[in-house]
Length: 141
Image 1 (cartoon, rainbow, N blue to C red):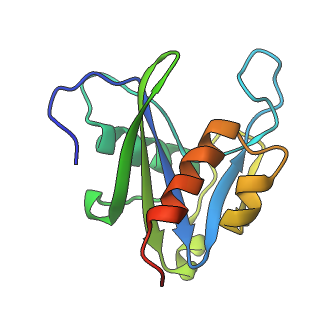
Image 2: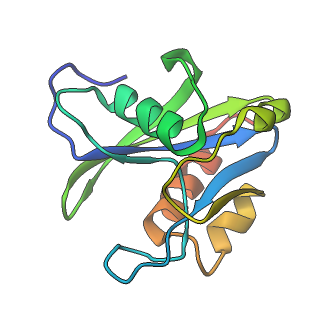
């Protein structure tokens, strides 16, 4: 999916549990981007990790889901003001929601219809755009 040693700032993962999207409500702190908005698992790169490793590590830290790289079924890289960012998608059975263990970042998590996220007034706008791109590109199930 990605090339070894490439330069990037971070990665996000759209995790589908059944038909729903896993979302995280960001902390409501004025010193962070998009306080109180609905976000997706992911974050900044650590060390020399790959984009896949970054997305999977952040997902484990934020919601406790331990995922293997083979669940990443779609990816795209995008240029953001702070650097290149990867966006991935993964689909898990709805029952995987029982494995969620919320971490210490954010106010909580929820499951949301992906189309609802794309139009939600508190969705992080550029992640809603990336999700729309994925929804248009994915095969119909």
